[in-house]
Image 1 (cartoon, rainbow, N blue to C red):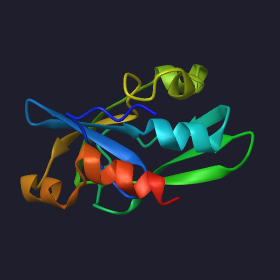
Image 2 (image 1 turned 180 degrees about the vertical axis):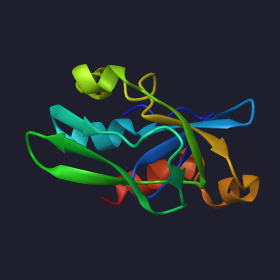
Image 3 (image 1 turned 120 degrees about the vertical axis):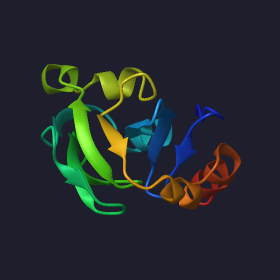
Image 4 (image 1 turned 90 degrees about the vertical axis):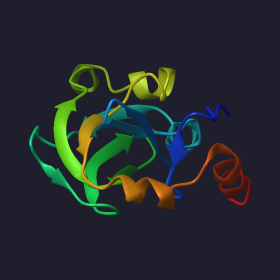
Amino acid sequence: MKTPKELRYTETHEWVKVEDGFAYIGITDFAQDSLGEIVFVELPEENDQLNQNSEFATIESVKAASDLNAPISGVVVAVNEDLEDAPELLNTDPYENWIVKIEIEDQSELDSLLDSEAYIKVTEEE
């Protein structure tokens, strides 16, 4: 499983990449592998308010449907519309294919996220 060191992670298998005051959010390699073949992604709308730890999207696979929780709070400034027509991109490369881009509301929330080493330990326990 890939777990890039420059990203931050949640125990519920979302990742965050911070760039120029914005955060890109997606699912981890562990998550996409656990879900199996992803067939649908329900995306939020631009300008939606995300609150840390609240549901913001749903991913459906051949195995199950899973809700995604926002790792941090912020306003959605972009959604990855490619996922509407090709949700399987999350299986191909979950770190290149982000789900939403948000304007970060509270930088301190990033401190509650896991680094790659801590996240790897979480996945080893599952």
